[in-house]
Amino acid sequence: MGKRIVVALGGNAIVTKTGTADSQIRSIKETMKKLVQFIEDGDELVITHGNGPQVGNLLLQQINGSSVDNPAMPLDTSVAMTQGSIGYWMQKSLDEVLKEKKLKKNVATIVTQIEVKEDDPAFKNPSKPIGPFYSKHEATVQHTMHSGCIFKEDAGRGYRRVVPSPKPQKIIEAPVIESLLVNGTVPIAAGGGGVPVICKENGDLQGVEAVIDKDFSAAKLAENINADELIILTAVDNVFVNYNQPSQKALTNVTIDELKQYIDEGQFAAGSMLPKVRAVIDFVENTGKKAVITSLKNVDKLIAGGTGTVITK
Ligand SMILES: Nc1ncnc2c1ncn2[C@@H]1O[C@H](COP(=O)(O)OP(=O)(O)O)[C@@H](O)[C@H]1O
Ligand SMILES: NC(=O)OP(=O)(O)O
Image 1 (cartoon, rainbow, N blue to C red):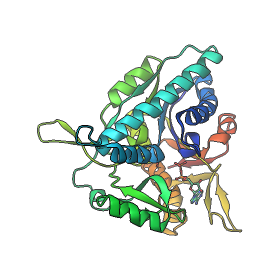
Image 2 (cartoon, rainbow, N blue to C red):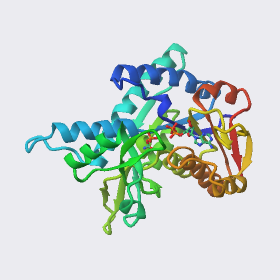
Image 3 (cartoon, helix red, strand yellow):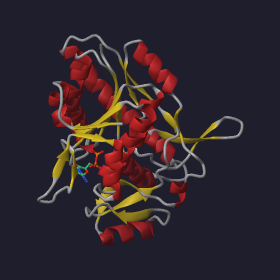
Image 4 (tube, rainbow, N blue to C red):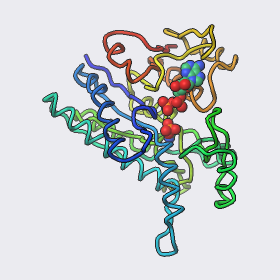
């Protein structure tokens, strides 16, 4: 019997050096050739993805191309725009792969809103890096040109714009996503971490300017739709302790208590592996189900029965 699986795709599944639509579509098609194996296996698949590079680039286009008659769109709308563009690329690519495999399945991208808390401390401490990398000098120039933009150093790789990244509380479209699954459709949902919204006193939703971390959204989505498993696909086969040191050790089977201890030891880099580890802890703790962190290229082996870092209670 198939499982209900939420797969979260990292940057290496989409992003290319040139950033053209064609190159990102080519990269995504290769990704879909891997993910189709879950469908062939009889699993119910929900695909979610990041948007850090794309939403940052889109914001730059908004800022640089805007005028009084053609205003720049706010960040929540820009997130929705990237859900649309990346979802379009994914849905088109997966459709093609399904056709090549002679599998009859519908694919649908859902513009997904995610509730966040209005008083989330993240709004006062922007931390989510988006868009291109700058040198320190370029970041200072950008900050001078666009006074509202904050730039921070990103894991030794250069400077990037940072925006608030509140924690997801509830997937608004979870019932729609579940009904699609029940009807045999493959939903692409909560893309780019979801459109962040707050719930007003009268129950209306209002978009807020932020980018939610897609790993936390994937965990909340998996929880809200009663998924059996959360799989986070990134660039490394395993989570490591003593990462990039001669004594590095791949984690294969690990409990959430062990992971918490490794967090206390500072084993996981903030802004890269740490949010993934925190997200899987949330999912496993809240549901008692299993999560996996591994690489996209490792999907074949994962489906064949193992490898990657498996996290259980
Ligand atoms: N302890 C660790 N174990 C494994 N990878 C780590 C660790 N600490 C940092 N990393 C880095 O985190 C990266 C994954 O984060 P990131 O690139 O932000 O993910 P995404 O795939 O979502 O874009 C890995 O490719 C690796 O370079
Ligand atoms: N929204 C988000 O977390 O995107 P990235 O994974 O691309 O940073």
